[in-house]
Length: 278
Ligand code: SF4
Image (cartoon, rainbow, N blue to C red; front, side, top):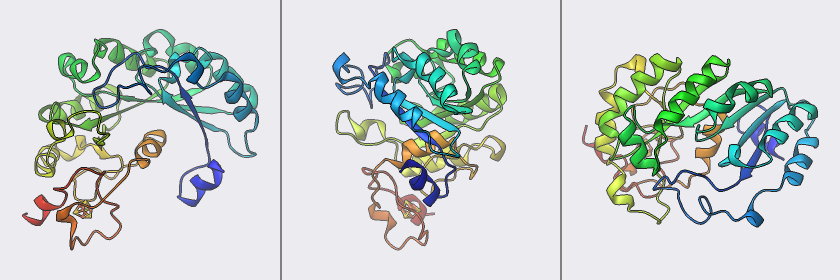
């Protein structure tokens, strides 16, 4: 079913293995009972993961691993090994990056070819305030270790009031350090935090993105057409993750000519207002 869904939308064939497990970070827009407080009985089972891997469809050799936080799942290493045995040749791993400094070489040997990791700032204090723990140094060391182990490094971020001033510096730093373009996505209003305090206006996001020179311009991950992002393809597992966001056109979208735009994620009522005023 995953294969058909992906092919119908123009994506390459792949299997998505979602491992749910308590995350050790506490990002303000995510932390809650279903992410930081997952009890053992609610964790994905190794048996279910093995069954999914062994049912690999013919011709599918790419495995996408996500969830929260998959690398902390006690079965993670054995599932990677099982993926190899089941015939998967390449693993794309979406992770918070904290385990990479210790395990990048081992995971590379087990088939991890790409890591997709969030970084919210080039400044440790800004990033750590957003993720709720001191993690920046470990994540950066982990991304360096991944690159040294031959793993492709893809970094994404959310456009937030807290980090918008530094988005250009982050994009430039990511590109010069790991050779890939920063991906940007919109905050989703889950009702569990103060969305109005942390979601920048469209005007502010457009201004910040336009100020970034084109060689460093971030690529959009499911962002609306009116945000000036680069049109490179995002990392597949990140694109699929952000595709699950609910979208609704804002009041400024009325009459917009971008017919193929699905609109911003719900909550951005000012979408299009800045563009209309341009
Ligand atoms: S539909 Fe709305 S969000 Fe999409 S490009 Fe137009 S104004 Fe922007």
